[in-house]
Image (cartoon, rainbow, N blue to C red; front, side, top):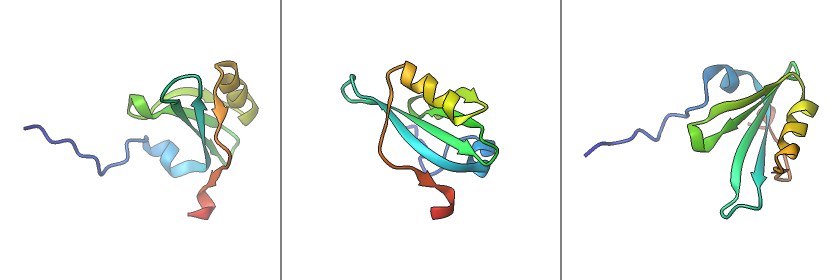
Length: 88
């Protein structure tokens, strides 16, 4: 029987070590809703990761506005609230 290690966090080290905030975005028209994770760093760069694809980075932008526009264009909606790295 094959065992899967679920204890390690699959986000690549650069995003994991440099993120300043995280937001969860959903595609509410699907059931269950499809979820994406937006991470922003101190320089303003934002990356979108797909948990369903082993946290593969699917979008990289130089600003939050650009990432937000990309997500809204694909009809994703933000979950209220933002997790800040400084809160942990």
